[in-house]
Length: 208
Image 1 (spheres, rainbow, N blue to C red):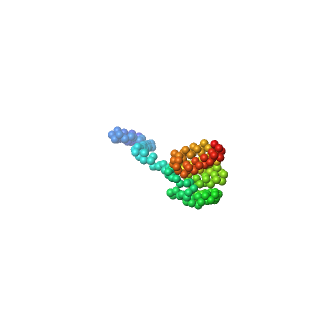
Image 2 (cartoon, helix red, strand yellow; image 1 turned 135 degrees about the vertical axis):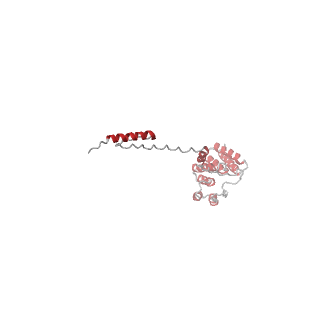
Image 3 (cartoon, rainbow, N blue to C red; image 1 turned 90 degrees about the vertical axis):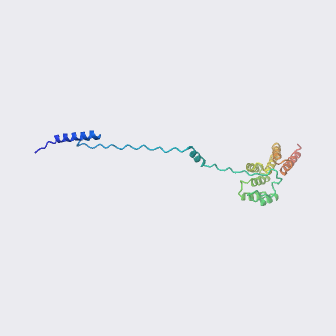
């Protein structure tokens, strides 16, 4: 016995169409695969923008490194460069000064290098003096200029630098330095008197 299903199929479809019309749903024919709508990706929410004040705080987090302070020397000091002197928090130069006064310049250089304080203007000044007295004038002058980078108002360094220029027969440069010492501490300070004395001796020797 053969059952004709076409009338039943048509009847079922008619019911499905009627239900779909009433509910507003879609109809999938019998025997076909159901269609699934893929859910759309939800749009990503944009991160809230940082307020301007927060941006400024972020920039300020990277603090600039503090600049190294230069040593400040009293321009009115009448202290000789070779007198025993220990700067605040500075190395003890008593032994090096004693060796220099005794003419033991090589020993003084060893002592000064042993201090490991090439950041100190007084150490650099005495290294310059010791090398200059050994005849290494250019080497000594390099130490003087390094000392002046750390202490531009160090009158003792200026005095020795002026003497070094006299050794190089540069009288004009020595006199320029003498004027600078005058501006720093006046004509009465020891550094001025010492360099002026050397300049006068230089002129007398050459009958200038």
